[in-house]
Length: 70
View 1 (cartoon, rainbow, N blue to C red):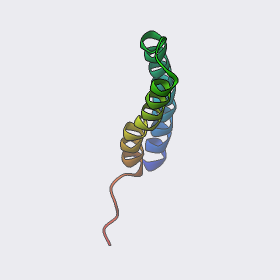
View 2: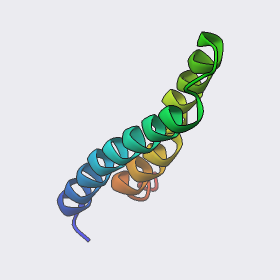
View 3: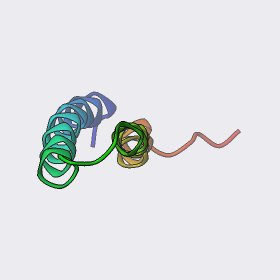
């Protein structure tokens, strides 16, 4: 697959990932954390704010393709 096509697909996947992840994380928070304290909200959003990086790293790694041998 050409590198330009992989980057286009990867960019679209990243945008979809961020939008879907934000909607899911916010829905879960509003459904389960309504009566929780501010510290629980802070911990939840700090954790979920960093957790999306893991699948994004996999997409970016796929976009970059295999390393060129030196």
